[in-house]
Image 1: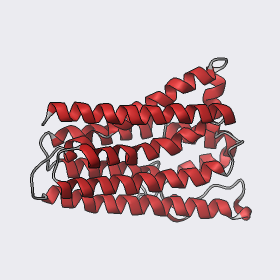
Image 2 (image 1 turned 180 degrees about the vertical axis):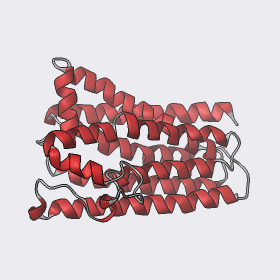
Image 3 (image 1 turned 90 degrees about the vertical axis):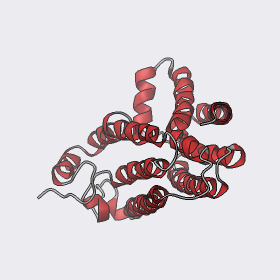
Image 4 (image 1 turned 45 degrees about the vertical axis):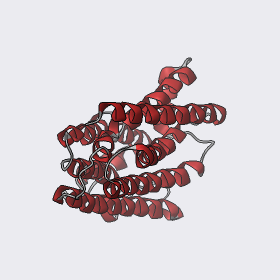
Amino acid sequence: MDNQSIVSLVIYSLLACCGIMVIVWFWAHKIKNAGVVDIFWSYNFPVIAIILLLFAPGFETRKLLICSMVIIAGFRLGTHLAVRITKHLNEEEGRYQQLRNEWAPNAEKKFFFFFQFQAISNVLLAIPFFIITLNTAKQLSPFEYAGAALWLISVLGEAIADAQLAAFKKNPDNKGKICDTGLWGYSRHPNYFFEWLMWLSYFAFALASPYGYLAIISPAIILYLLLKVTGIPATEAQSLRSKGEAFKLYQQKTSVFIPWFKRS
């Protein structure tokens, strides 16, 4: 692994992501809605992918494949979040309202550092992409084909889950109700499951490259965050506050994470 190349690529990526998040923080501060950070957290991965595509020294076909995967997935998720969040820019999402209350009276200052941490997490989670795009081997491996296939399944699964939830919320008859149709009838968080599966696909793809085993860091971090920190705990806490007993009943009927397991 070329240490000089990877250090330069990490620095470029950090500067780009942190710079973007500074601009996003100013916008969030102006509109009093920290939820916009989610949009640009997703968009930062395509930014990193473009940097790697342009400057990483790896095999061009491999770079084009993995960077295309990252750009497509990041742009899809970021745009989905942008459509959802910009519909109620004047109404901050519940979990960010909770943080704002907990961090008062220094909420804006703490949100600045929170946004910068999100940028750093972009680069940390991009470890598989750095490893893959430094690989100069001229032939693709079965690991890379398997990773690409798993990525396709995960992106389609997440897109389906997002579309099902969006369609449910769009129906005025469902106002105040809990989405329990489609994949949401089996898992309370099928979108999170497929998001994690996508990161697992990047690990599988990276196994064909030198030091590829280090890429396990990314799906491990994502799984921890989803299960223990900012994903499922925050989302379910907000659902319990807003939906109460109805959500407790939904919890009893569905799996927390894996969408093909349904409780009897």
